[in-house]
Structures are given as C-alpha cells and as structure tokens.
Image 1 (cartoon, rainbow, N blue to C red):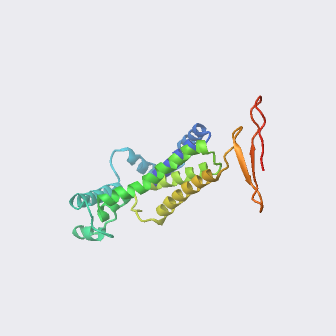
Image 2 (image 1 turned 135 degrees about the vertical axis):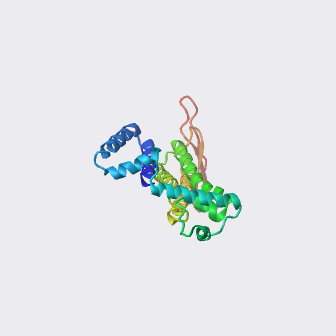
Image 3 (image 1 turned 45 degrees about the vertical axis):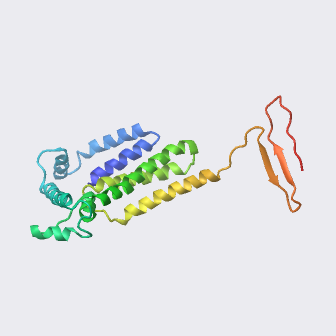
Length: 231
C-alpha cells in the first residue's frame, strides 16, 4: 500500500511539475536502480501485486473483504454500525480487521454512506483539479503549489485506503477542510483583485468632508478628444 501511494503521489507531482517528463524519467531510473539494492524477499512480495500466487497476508485480506462485502449485500442501507467488525468476528472465532477503508465504511454504515464518503474524498480531488485549471486564468502565484500538494495527499490517501482501514483518520478531514478553505481564499483573492481600467473608462474618487466628487477618464486612444474632469 505504501509503494502504490508513493507512486500515486510521484505521478501527480511529476504531472504538475514544469519539467514533468524529465522528472518521470528520473523516477523510473531511480526505481530501476532500487531493484539492485532492495532485499529479494521484498521484491518477491511486490511482484505478487501483478498476479500469480498471493502471499498469506494478501490472501487473508481478500478473505476478510469477502466477509465484509457479503454482510453489505445483506445489510446495504444501514450497515452494522460503528465497530461492526466485532459482531462479524464472532462466527470466525478471530478478530477481523477490514484492511480497506471502503469496505469498512460500507459494512459499518451502508452503501449510501459509502457514496457520501467517496464523494467527500474524490470530490475534493476533482475540485482541486478544477482549481488548478482555473488558475491559468486567475494567475494567483501561491495557488498552484498548494492545490497540487493537497491533491497529491488526497490521492495517496485514496490509494492507501484500499489496503488500510483508515476511514476515520483525522488527516483525511484536515485535508478536505484545507481544500475547501484554499478554494474560498482563492475566490476571495480574485474578487478583491483590482480590475485594470480600460481606455476611456471613468474612474471615481470621493472627496473629503465637502462631499466633492471627481470624475475623470483614462487616456483615450490616439486621435480621440482628451477626457475631462468635473468637481
């Protein structure tokens, strides 16, 4: 799970980087070089991700997922409530750990809750991607890196959640709130940014206590009559 999460982060950050292709090539070279220094046992376990015979840990997780999904099909709307794994562990005689945040949410709260939870997670990723796209027009210098890093962190969480029961980790909700605040601050900055005056557009300046108002025009295009001011 850690390797896949790291790969998701690396791909997103490389995609966002200005020299993304060069960075991807460098990452591939480093990954190829790591194959010569990492333990053979670790490499064999990573190879099991691509198919073939699964190791006992992977088989155990898949068996637990089947138990959980079978319960979801019989209780799809409300699930078994918080800590529902205690109830499902009784027939097997051993304590179960879902090792999957998606299965955990579905088992404990039902499919509607899973849809809402996924909307919270993946909706935040989509909103951050849209924010990056809009910043091509807004040109806020601080926005791109913040949005890209939050998106990468949420993507890492989404991938890691396939193999870990981290449904209630506070980190997820900190990241979601950070994404919401980032969009709010970006929109506020755009709304408060001064709009460049167009040639010939009037500008107003309020006077002091006397209440006088000055109205003037910016320099008109060449060939037109000069603007005026009145007090």
